[in-house]
Length: 360
Image (cartoon, rainbow, N blue to C red; front, side):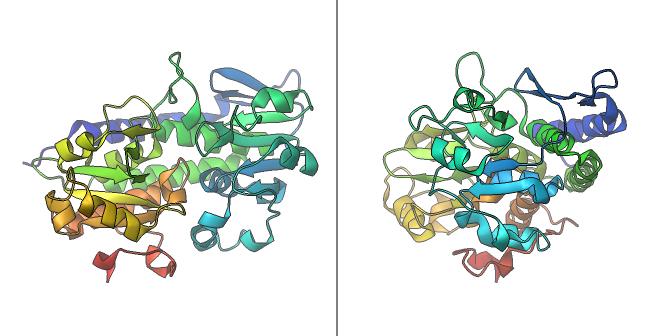
């Protein structure tokens, strides 16, 4: 009899819970019959608006994908930080006119960028790479003084300790999909997307598991330390759904740094990379082959590397596509049994995505 890991049990429980939530979705958030106010819960706080948002500003490829999936493309008046994800977003959303999105600013948004496009609401998150930053003088309270509402990416909601993450990553994602759908007047579209994710998660949960669940490691980037993701980040949800163990699941945070000894001790069966500018695929491979902590790992010596775009790893609807590709990869490398899971999004069409020789 095949053994199912705690991770797969969590995914199965989430699918069942998601079904229940979908059935009673109308009670979660939405217009108040008494006041006409639209209300959602965001990071433990009520967010109220008088009418659906018509001018939305978004930062980061994953956040942009949430807006697109929720049916709010026409309300998306400006974006920042799309360049690294343009190809995968065009592949995933061919009807979304990605090339016509108004881009402002450089790598990160500034207060001036936001004010210049006059949004009613900004959708971003706390911390590294998600938009809001004290060091760049762009925080929700800075926008409040200018009459601009903010919606925070649920993955980045803060714990009392200051670490990010207050709910499991699938719940964070579906919460954001439903909330953005509600805030922009597209709740039915968002509910349909959530139902689609639920169906695909159920297929993954039904895939046969190994007697001993394989361990995988997410290598975002690194030299002196390794940037990776803990139990509250999108990768945790992805790995749980694919039936593998995240080597950093005990780190109660989202995106964070760990030492090289964590990689060495985990001895992962497969190493996954986040593809984005800054450290190339080849540089990551060379770093792993050169570092004494990693160069003798079997996954490194045998080249068991998988490279997927940034927007598939950060919280967003492409997480389900990433989960299907993780499953495809670990089946290819023979660490889980073959299954009927077939990736929906064909990343082989991404000509600029390096590595992945195993796909050929």
